Image (cartoon, rainbow, N blue to C red; front, side, top):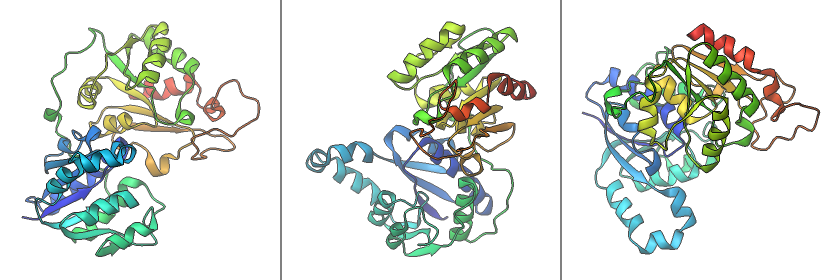
Length: 339
């Protein structure tokens, strides 16, 4: 048996991107066992995959804000004990940032990652004992699958990603309504990735006319306030749910419409039909891949800009302006093709 430690701390979409690599590896060696270091807020996601037997949570985001407290209250020492409890055959840094490379260096095992010229943050490669060259300009899922194939020594098969997720890891959730429903994922971390609220309202009305109830999840106060504003167009605002709980609701949906956000990747992982909307980001590199996944990219002069703040100053009826090329009628037509 080969025991491998994965360092992939965040974010939600990036963690889900790594799951097909585990499926590839398990097909090559069915006895392989993965442990995973991940931000505590995402600790349930790695366990969706049957070959992950242990998760080591880390709260690096909070620790960076409370450096002295975490050093003196024993939290960091406790994490370090958990991390170094076992010696691994291989340690794979699938994130390739300086912070993930430092965690990799603190672990026990043969440290592996991307080469200096192909890692996201180049100096991260200095922390690895074995480095592998994987072209950067390709989809994140394919890039990780290639890395795992090189580290573990098998031939990469460029097939549709198999996330390998087990729905039984999700809690049993009663359907929130008696009618067929759609889930609209309106929340995301960048303001520039937010589809205009007027567009969401128009799409909700189209869905209602077709006999669907629309469910609106939320994860923070801003998203809750947006969901409540959108609910005026006859949608149902869900209560505050954990990642596993909202994922369980998504698996019951007829389809999903999503901005570029982590839960959109959860829909892809569980095989739920989805239309994903991309304005400032490029679906060629980060799209939610899988069966029945449609990607609509803005056709605008400055898109994709990869910017968290919109710098467009021209005339526009909506903001971000790039989304005016993805109006509700166009999105509904694509959604209808899935339904």
